[in-house]
Length: 267
Ligand SMILES: O=C(CO)COP(=O)(O)O
Image (tube, rainbow, N blue to C red; front, side, top):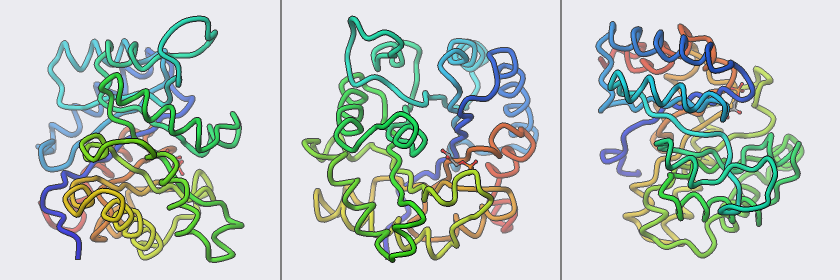
């Protein structure tokens, strides 16, 4: 059984292309208030919001100015550092805004923007170059799942994305297992489905790096996470958090998800 003691669970809300900067400010204030009202212990369960690029400055101002304990990040970054890349956002800009995390390789970017594993690997490297922690997404399609090939497929994505990185770098990565068939569909992977692939990811980290790295890296589950299913998923040994899409823009629902331990009587 994996040693879960060192890993602080992370609940991250990927807002996708929802909420403008004014709505973002309202949500962050409400979320902070709701969690503080329930005496949420941020050292025990970390909470992050991942807004659209145009919201980040507003979110940063609020979080820094009021010393909120929420973390924040971005949904993507460029593989390039700077220059003539119209529309791209550099990891350096994200670092300068204080982003803790950047999502890399989300299935929506892979599918709609044709990002392949090689580009994902470049983006992971760009995140590290700028000191922003990559939140790397991997996950299989329904077709792959039906064929029973999910573990091999996800480990294949992982191998390419991590290629060339040092153990020291990978030690801090966050990996999100997001089966494509469970994203935005209401179709949630069972806790055992999530555990199977998350455990396989951890096993691969052990093979590629070391047991210490495998024990340190947080592996999240994402795909139709709601307040009603989060506790059962989080109860699995190798699941260290959730990457929440749709439910993260409903502030009451997201705050309830962040407090999943309360549902199982742990706090
Ligand atoms: O893609 C996701 C998070 O990155 C999951 O989205 P849903 O929670 O809406 O299924």
